Image 1 (cartoon, helix red, strand yellow):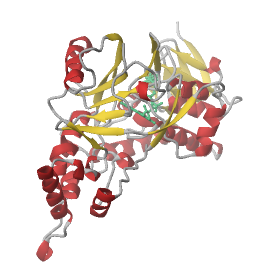
Image 2 (cartoon, protein in one colour; image 1 turned 135 degrees about the horizontal axis):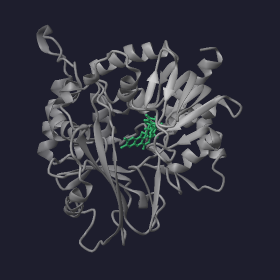
Image 3 (tube, protein in one colour; image 1 turned 90 degrees about the vertical axis):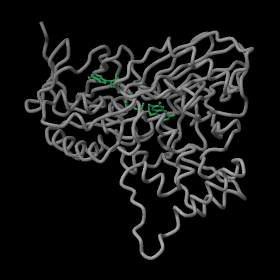
Image 4 (spheres, helix red, strand yellow; image 1 turned 30 degrees about the vertical axis):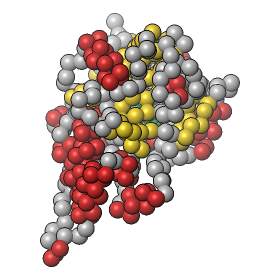
Length: 430
Ligand SMILES: Cc1cc2nc3c(=O)[nH]c(=O)nc-3n(C[C@H](O)[C@H](O)[C@H](O)COP(=O)(O)OP(=O)(O)OC[C@H]3O[C@@H](n4cnc5c(N)ncnc54)[C@H](O)[C@@H]3O)c2cc1C
């Protein structure tokens, strides 16, 4: 028989967002975290296998708020943390081009460079005779309008189609927000003489024990008896403020959910259009080999459609270890059937063809995980429907936060900032 409990703040999800919410509420606060999985951490989990340390794809930390970084580090005694200057490349036509592609077209073969420069210039030049400027009503149009056909079609479109696994024409113009490396004509020309490839993640930090060390740090500020793992939210009465799990009913004053928004919307029973929420999923392979692979690189982008993955990263070049420890990312539509074991031989063949491995490498450990959802498809309809429905939920004391609760593109630090701001709003009364 199910029991009934009561709590002031019910938190759904013990990933970064849920833990940061509980930590911000403080030790003495009346909260309970429901976590459907049997472990905390959400997408920030770490796997230790045969001496390799792997995350759910590379999870690197780029802090804009020094006080957040200091708060976390103070809770990580004894943990070695590297601050790394990022080195990333694009594999293009048998050579390596610095990232971002659009700022490094001068590294292309001469003919292709001229094509890119020509198309960029005329895309950027105001149309003669008062003709209307090209439209940018979606992500794909934005790429053509700002960078011209050649840059768009050589890198930006094929790479992002592999990642998002959708028609880029359906995405909002700002679908990647601050994570898109914008550059204007002057930036691109200037870069030909003096390289400045800085981006939001030019330097990143990474703990020796993997991304989960940051989760551990957050969790150290959360009462462990207030985290119920293996207990998903499965029902919600939004009017009476009652949550249901397989074990009990929980009355709450307010609910903070980091579950994917489409799931919260479905549980809420509020009228909405579920078809506006679409996303990709990412199959991640973590691969440990018996010897070193490429040096001096943290990750490589693969726009070529003939290569199954869109990105490969190198954990072994963060702490300079002596065996290739790679993560490989492959994008799929949300509804696609994914059989990791069947894909692995293709991944290994493509790594060999791409020169990441060289015939002598022996795979000695591997792991795979499907991140679903991974990148949400931010469209004009998803923005409008999320805003409307999140407002209706908020009016009932239900707050949807985090990368998937907010149906957005963001970093771990953004999740912590958002959780803290939400809790600060509660103390003003909610
Ligand atoms: C491929 C990839 C690479 C990334 N790399 C980086 C990076 O390098 N740096 C960076 O800063 N960010 C990165 N991110 C983003 C980062 O993973 C997220 O911002 C962050 O993990 C989101 O945390 P969250 O708590 O909001 O969500 P999640 O981690 O998804 O946590 C939500 C939790 O809710 C639980 N849950 C869901 N439904 C229910 C339910 N009904 N009941 C109970 N519990 C439920 C889930 O089990 C999960 O534990 C990356 C994301 C992806 C997809």
